Image 1 (spheres, rainbow, N blue to C red):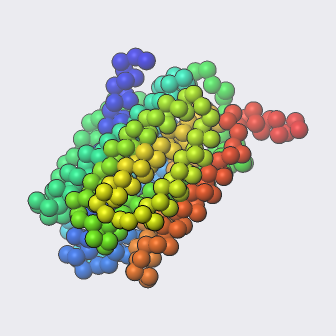
Image 2 (image 1 turned 180 degrees about the vertical axis):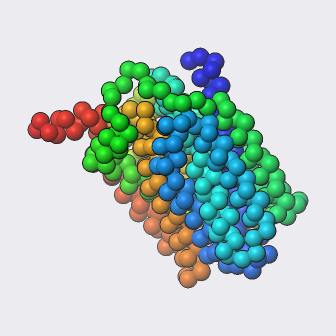
Image 3 (image 1 turned 90 degrees about the vertical axis):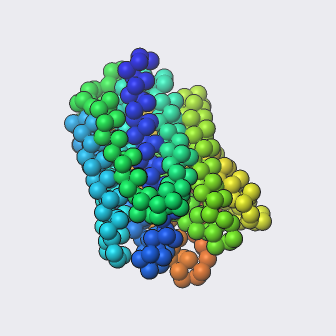
Amino acid sequence: MTARLWLMIACGATIVSIAMGIRQSMGLFVQPVGIDLEVGRDVMGLAIAISNLLFGLAQPFVGAIADRYGAGRVIFGGTVVYVLGLLLMIVAKDPLGLHLTLGVMTGLGLAGTTYVVVLGAVGRAVPPAYRSRAFGITTAAGSFGMFAIVPGTQGMISWFDWQGALVGLAILTSIMAVLGLALAGKPKEPEGEISTGSLGETVKQAFRYRDYWLLNLGFFVCGFQLAFIGVHYPSYLLDRGVDAGSASIGLAMIGLFNMVGSYFSGYLGDKFSKKYLLSLIYLLRAVVIALFLVIPLNSVTAIMFGAAMGFLWLATVPLTSGLVGLMFGTRYLSTLYGVVFLWHQVGSFLGAWLGGEAFERYGSYDPIWYASIAFGVMAAILHLPIREMSAKIALGREQMA
């Protein structure tokens, strides 16, 4: 690959690293913001759930804009909204203010600065033989952001209070606008791919393709599990007597080991069946969560859980996006992966919101832990019938049968 492609991957990876690292830090604000504003975890959980939902709802539209006008413009707009959401959260005084800033604005900002936009640009530029690996590198960067930014955010909250931490995060976020220049430019038709027609024709084809919907349902489970753990895991540990430092290290371990898991899954995705790798990842998640609930909880086991879940955390992204590219090509990858990511974020909304609701109603997160295990097994089964080929060819064979 050329130096320009590596520069694009590096800048795209850094953008994802910043955007996702800050997103994963929001769980650290649940308790301090709740105490200062005298709101329950259900309020903060709903705000983060709204962010996750809008993050997903905007993806198909943001992806379509990026497919037509280029990723650079979308990243710039997303950065502006993201920065404003973080800064205005400082002056929020009630649940409505939190829902508008932490919820609506950060959700829309994330939509323009993360995987759908960046992976679409990278996928069109990188040769097919290296595509899953490039997706893995970009995805791993989001994990590095989690590893680096989460502990830094905890430090800023301790040193400057939560308002000062938000100012620091807003300054960091603004860097993404400059990095987006490396991904600027109007997308071109990729060479050497089967044409799927116009955007409208491709979307219609995707919506009547069974395997695409199986992928959507699997990614719904991914979002449910990740949002619940990302938002409520720190509070769960504090409730069970684990200190705040170990809780932040546990989150950081998710980011650290996710770097390895994401790259490794992308590397394997270029060599082995993507659907079987996805089934294995979801099944292993269910096993890890089940073991976490039955072993004694302390600082060591909390950190070990973070490491184990981290290895599986975003390992689904390069494989899922790779399957979308395999089914429909990369010309409209941002749009079609945006739809898949929408389902991920519907799951994220429910995971973040129901986690808070379960705690307020039952004083325990156990119902959502159990649901996460069941969903993991379900997702493992759903991926098995997926056909790893062009949807146009698969649908043609169905008509001939």
